[in-house]
View 1 (cartoon, rainbow, N blue to C red):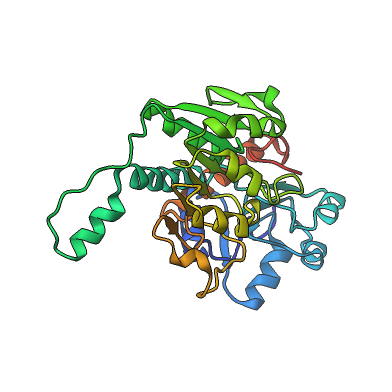
View 2 (cartoon, one colour):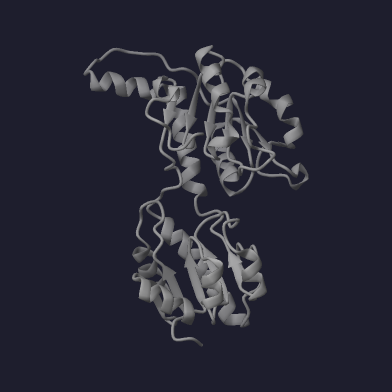
Length: 319
């Protein structure tokens, strides 16, 4: 066993310092030596010594220097930025953080949809003006149709939470035969068929060649004019000029965006000027429980490795 079992790279997550992660792991792994690589010297030393390294990224040179490395526990869901070929050559297992963000992103989506339905933003505006004057809600969520594009951990969490609101849910995924927690699951090729009956369109898919620009002029035209579009995927999934045009022509009731294209959104961009557009600066993934959930995955995997003596069959293992 190396001198350092677990090295926590000093990579913050959503503004939460990695020191918090190291503290949680040290508390939950009393039989392991856990260290935070807080300085460049620590970073180089711990990479050489550690059996397990956890952080946002590791480059090919660092992999070469990591003599004892058996597992890289990535702190993001995506791992395309990692030198996967080099890690595979060294026999290093790789896990990701898929699912860690699901509960909080799903709550972000629900908050937006309820705000549209109950016009809570209007209530807030009147409160700021100290104006006690009644207003009418827009709709009820119950009885509506919610289409969720992407049925990964986040999409599934969104669908499961909407189920409590007595809605019909449609899931859209690459492989519809895999099913999902929605009432109906269709493939991407069937998206044009379900859009005309969609009241809330939630985008929770990865950005790929298939999904880039997925929602454009044709799709906005297909949606009902009282539909709401929510994007917690990536900004490029929506054709932004087409979205602006749809909003200007009242072809949509509104949009809620945690991600935009471009991102950050320039201060002079047209999207800032719409009262029926809710914008947050890519913060849906934040939760004060992030490191706890991340630790749940790593602790479970280390317990399995301790029992079996191998870094195989781990939860969220991608390589």
